[in-house]
Length: 243
Image (cartoon, rainbow, N blue to C red):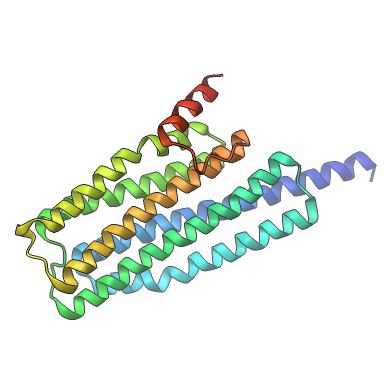
């Protein structure tokens, strides 16, 4: 086989490895989003079977995380990636870590559901907190989807959308906590503490989405923006995008 064909074969194999790495992230992201939605649904419905199913599926997230880590190490060892590809590979490793931790939050919510059900019959969520809980869940799931889409499509707009939604995330968290603290909720003791833990877990999932978006910016621009002022960061990224 001519030398240039060897080079083409190597490049094609390398591209396939990077594509496989992206596929692992997409699979992991979709699994975590499903886990998050299912965990909250199980809580809202007071469904122990559904909560246990979330816990039972958690090892899939761990397996995908380990597979992605192995692929990262293999690509670095075999291919010695160029600067931009190295950024992609390193950022992917960090993104996988955030997705794994987001998956842990879903499992935590499911475990709290089972714990609450040992002390109280459904419904576990006060009526006035149901809508805020669902709204916060959808917000954090959409943020995860935007952030990962930014990586897969190399789309800075998706990352910007995550940063721009930060105030919406804060508001959604405040609305849920306000509903839980309201006198009409009738919450006390472990029941109250458990639902506050759920609210915090969802908030942290939104933070993980923000971390992923920061890695997307790193891949596309080469800038580490993890400790930037959010408002200044959004302004700079808009300027960068428009040029």
